Length: 96
Image: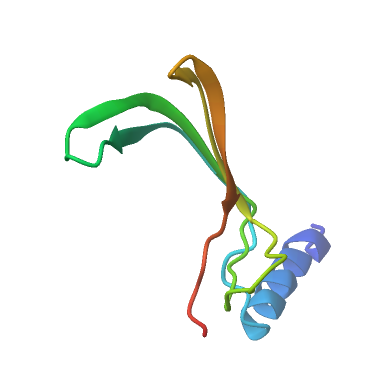
């Protein structure tokens, strides 16, 4: 029996935990909700087909400029007639 591959996987997991890497895998989910509310509190629009993707890392501090996003939001449903996607989406973990 070849135990090299399972042993290597266990070693990688231990290394990641030792380095403090707790989320190292990309995440993607579909059919999420987006609701736009107008300034008066009324419903302005929305959809239930939002796609969320996250490359798996967490930021620990806010950059004053030049922040590189690590997640995206998008939908194939037009919002006021325009297909949209959210930019500069950033997932944060504990930090400053």
